Image (cartoon, rainbow, N blue to C red; front, side, top):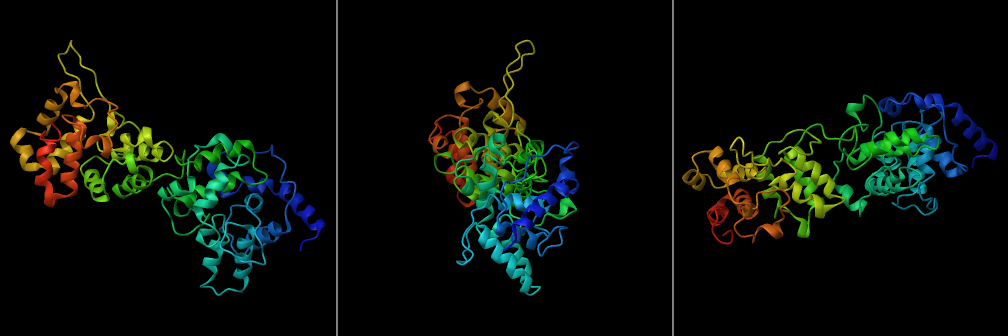
Length: 406
């Protein structure tokens, strides 16, 4: 048990270490120049938090698990917000006690065992002391950490499963090799932990909380767009009446026929845009799932009004993916009806508005499959043909306007 004098000395040393904190890896990433004004440290540092952070980080980051936190202050700030738990009753819960027991175990563990104990002793617990998502959601939703700076996501722990998982937690540098970056829960834990530090200013919270958001403002983003990531998010975000595919095969097959684009696009006819809206669907599925679906719903892709002076008809963004999916899913039927891909798009653009190509048709599996003579109905059966090529002949007639798309 630490003495009261040592606690006071530790708090004083934290204030003196602020300039070191400023130089930490995460702070370097933030690019914040003026960090001289600080908030007061936590009023009470528990003996358990003192022991835990001394063990894990140590005054000069030479503790038993130095890759768990960027600074001692960040460790203390996170620890101060965790439930205490009971040291005498070891559990796998998201508590200080569980992490402290894991940190103590590192001292006598074999080299082979130490990494797993350190992962348990980290801010996320890594499934041994609560789940990474449980810790992330607890911290990011706390008023004293991120408050209203971040998007509020209902059922955060469940929706957090949409993030990638690096399988280990490491705050080291270079940043591109460790968890300061990447579209993972671990990256978001790095940044929300920094925001939880007891000496952290509002300016640093304004920087790191958006990094930790579901839609990360920087760092916690995918380096490239992939169909697996797109479908992973949809499987968590758009379910039940908000589903835009009936199964994973359909999602993967449709994705393979569309342009991947770039991460964080939000208006282009790409999978990057659809993934962006899939992430938005984690908090608001009724509005965003259709935008993440195969048609883009006029949000991934832009409608263009008719220009009478030039004699050009309206162009509907959803006609482009519809024709691509139709040609890929029903190639022989497509060749019999259209002279080319461009011919399909031109005919689709010239269809009556009732065809349902215009923006905000609210595409979902539930609404599309019996939608009559509409683009969404045709798209639904084209996607079915793509996802189940052995039975495509059963679906292609509907994709071209037979019942129920008549």
